[in-house]
Image (cartoon, rainbow, N blue to C red):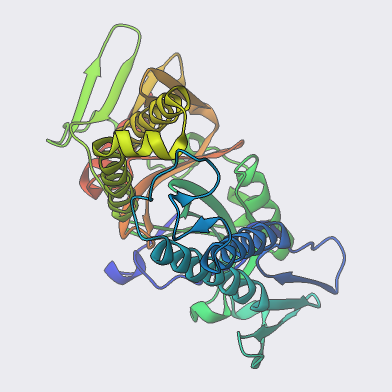
Length: 399
């Protein structure tokens, strides 16, 4: 099952795919598909950027501003703004045009992928129209890899589930399936491996794990018994210092002892601090803001909404995750303020559980792969702690 390839196998360079919704259909060959940013993502960016730029130009050319009067002419009681309107208008124009250019550039780039049953042909188009073409035989690929990529979506983090045909040269790795919905991802992974008659591949903290096609119908528990590896998990592992493990009569609760932040957490903290700084400046100048808005009631509502949003952001930054093992199930609990969201996995249906590297955050997380989904736990938690959780879950499922 496991093929050790040394430390570099854990963190080998991964390709960057463009799409968020992609599927290379193999029912009939030849087949083709384009890996590019979808228009439904690009167009809102273009529209938002144009609106910002137009609004900035309108204001910069004197749209609603009366420099010799009281300020903005929307309301007779209005006073001068907190910031220079010229600087704000210029910022709107620059940011708006930047969003438009970035959106267009993201759509112009693409990869066209062709497959005739034996050979892949890939046409890559760059930003300035430059084209690059390569061809590669199917037999030169290592296997079908499943991985999950975290990406920043505004102030939130989202997951992108990727099934790809792995080549030793990352630039020749072929995307097969990409989605932000992980439903049924194991069956999709299994489908491509079987269709291409290639082993499944997953890069872990200990190297590259492969399973040949005949082994894919087995759960992790069945696989360990079939390979005689169950003896490795006969004793409960010793709890590491970074983990709290609470054993009760009907359940076991596992959680990190403290918060572990990765680069996405730091980015979120930066934007939260910026937001709080702006909010504090507005609160300090409350009377001036009230005069600008023109209504004490509306000002109070806006400030209340802004403070509520700040509380939600803070709660999101400090949300807590834990694993509960109960009644033959693994329950992944995400607690946000007073709200709990739960994901379930039957222990008997877990296909694999591994500590997997996420290059975007330069950290590891625990990937729990089931027939129905791929659960992620412990982003930023030390690998030794993730290994312990993996071993303890396997120990529990084999009792």
